Length: 371
Image (cartoon, rainbow, N blue to C red):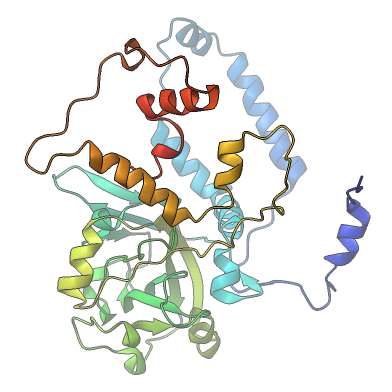
């Protein structure tokens, strides 16, 4: 009997050890205001004590008439711990690592992004990691944030997982610079908006909105693209290189991101908008291990055991021929019986064959794979 070796936590820690002097992360955004935890705890306890002593509040809660103003709750959250929470979620999704490497920032500016759907009051809102389908993000989104009218901003939307050729590169889906205040419409469109297009078979892609605070008016002439820009090669982008060259004049301040995967609308998008064949990816799984065949296998049903060592194409051919025997070229197929087991079965058949016929009647087992 072979004993399995389990790695201890101490050994795992040694193997994954990183020198803190080399692997530390740098805050490239605005500083997070420091608050005393003891002071915050004292204020919370004082507030809870006052609420519990409020008899009118207790009466409203007991009679199920107490309403909670969610707008005020959200506003208080944004003013207190929202930046820390958003940073934690972004780290969980690997956003900072794939955007900036060993750097991060606290999203001090709350960035609101929503896609208008069919209907005046229907929106697909971008939060932090929620799923939005490409069909829902087909049109340019509405972006909102609080800013001084005299300030300048840059907004970038990139896909961290979607580049077809280069592993460490992104596609820029939207680039607007020199935005006065929060008026996106008056900003300089460097690269027009292009909807997400995650190819079939590639899973979920992270599309990230980053809002940068500018110290001065920026010259983005080298990134200027002819509009509409439908050449994916021209949309190749690397956020890390972009920021390193302009880190003295740009400070990341806002963050929102969503995930998107393939949907049927992208077939038309690839063919008629990008004018290219639709790429489809499949994972090439390694062949499963099958132990060498034995003369007398113990506790193994012989029919399924023998099929392990047969050609899958031959098995599929047998199922196809069996199906074609019941198929007429000019007639509809017979409807399946309502009670499949109501038909008598020959009891002289071996038990394994009776089981196979029962599965075939019910549509269970391997018949599904080859039907």
